[in-house]
Length: 354
Ligand code: 1CP
Image (tube, rainbow, N blue to C red; front, top):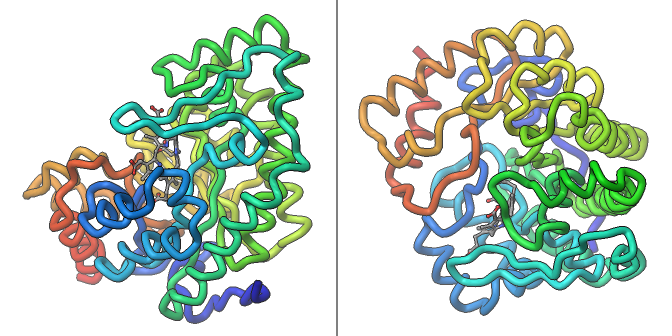
């Protein structure tokens, strides 16, 4: 595997906000920018067989990572993989069923934790690192590469329930009934995520993002233990191993706790969901030296038209002169017309030039 290319700050627009500089127009990428809304993705997906086969086949995974870069010219690519690669690599049975989403063999109690084995991850993670290295080689100079993992709490909600849930009740119940046992699961996911992100960085990722989609399901007093503490461990360890690589946190749904999350975890960037009031958060986040990222409603990207145009301009002006990266407030949905994505990129690039 080729060694990590050092980030080219001066050539890479995406990295500039992380040195405290607001740039105009802001860099733009979109969560789930590779995926089912693109016909060229659906074609490769069919060829690959299962979804996990696609994640573990470096030539194909690299190709779908690069597709949205070629089509739209985003400022950053995000590695094509999934947050559930981590439990799968640890030995949990994970399948992606057509039209049903992920199905895992649930781990419901501390006694089941012996099914997770940290020494087993090497081969599967090696495939992901090879994808990262291939993407790095295939990217235009100046386009950043984002590596990622799910936050321990969000991954745990799938590990415990065995599928996606609306209320994350199974993980919350385990955490209440047996906090010691549940914290062993969180610890396994935390140490594995550190190794996994560090491996992605060594293979060529310039930035990493920690997706905590279900952070907002926890009551305030539980947030500290299951979201903030494990995230801080990941950020602290990555900072000591790779001080130059920014870490973006995306704790979806935590609302007023965002400044606390930013201060306590030490992230360099904060992904804002659609409910986060960016104008109110802006100065506080900028004072902390942290980049704000967000937060267009993915459904507005489906709708398109003048409302989309209005909101894109509004978001850019809400960011003001704070270091900012344009994104959605959550992932692209499959019914999004690719032409609306092209229009969005055009709007971001024009919107702040005049
Ligand atoms: O059939 C298909 O092609 C599967 C659809 C799909 C895709 C395209 C899944 C299944 N995962 C992905 C890719 C993916 N997942 C990426 C790739 C990079 C990108 O372009 O952004 C990333 C970053 C993820 C992250 C992910 N997976 C999250 C966190 C972000 C978010 O969207 O909230 C979560 C929660 C998952 C789990 C997952 N994987 C897939 C589905 C349908 C789900 C959600 C399941 C549920 O809760 O019901």
